[in-house]
Image (cartoon, rainbow, N blue to C red; front, side, top):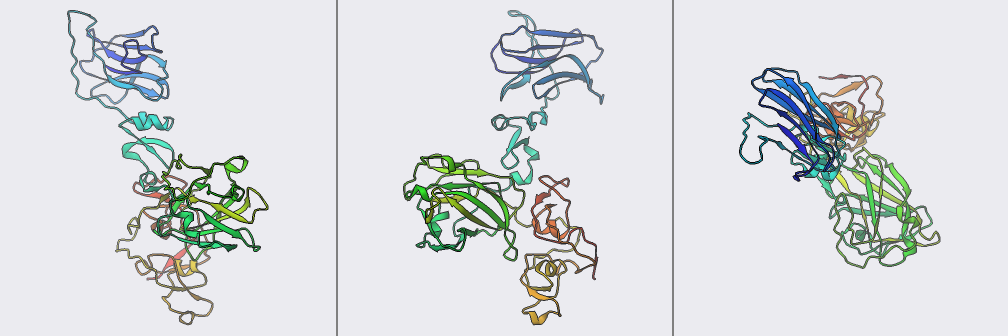
Length: 442
């Protein structure tokens, strides 16, 4: 019958369920390496063929049986608690109880393992070591390989600031054209000489122009001026160039209390992953909670290691993140073909112009009084009927869909991480009128 054991050593801890030649079932287990084995045997059960099942829930193990055509699993034997650690062996055990002369054989039709191996309680290393499981990098949980959430299956990046991204500084009197060094994948230093207009920082627009989800930030130390290290930050994001930045996170950086931060030499390539920075270099990393996807990012530094320092200097900034899957134009309740549109439209606001699919325009003169010509975020206007809202209320809660555009256009279910509809994932969405009553205009 099935056996789960800690190792292949003869004295290994194990838990087993057996059917005997007499027709009875027995449950044997050894709760630690070298401990005495326990045997729990039932009476004779008249079943010519039988299914045996061993169930492991955390460290608790149980045995069950059922007839070939039966639906119900019947428990038998003893329940044991065994700590197998991060990995263990599963297989079929067969014995004749003779050490020298007799052989035994077992005939079975199938052997199955189920997703109980991939419970959320399993460790990352234990999950990765199982051929049946896959670790979710974003959700940090263990799943059946066939049930990995789409957000975990999507592309993850060491930093969402890809090559060619646009970098703009603010409240810097001078940077000596070092802006690009902030995201070039090398340890050459970015330097901002502070102006008197406010806290300085960077606005970065990734070149891939794809919405991304970030939950951590890394700053690599520059070569010079330890007193110029930033030690307090605020991170902002925006979903389109038509919206204001909103705060994602703000706090002291962990290296604020470090007195002797190692310095990085110039022009050293940075080799980081989503999970880890380059451990051969000096950096600080901060993690934060965030479930929203954003297009552009703004980082503001309000304090340096020496408050009187006139400059901020660092070698690199990274935002490890997940890229939103590409739009497929599917997942709606409309049967016609969906075509993406970015044409400017008339409305009282950008959200109004986009959500009501206002008239296409070139200037404000093309719009009626009280409405203006807005550049709008990508939408399905032209593919779906215009909507007339009675009392629109702006919403921005995350929603489910095959992509961000479908999630907000067709008002998918509200979500945090998971969606109930197969193939849909939870998206941070642009402002919309979801939840407001409307009438479609044919």
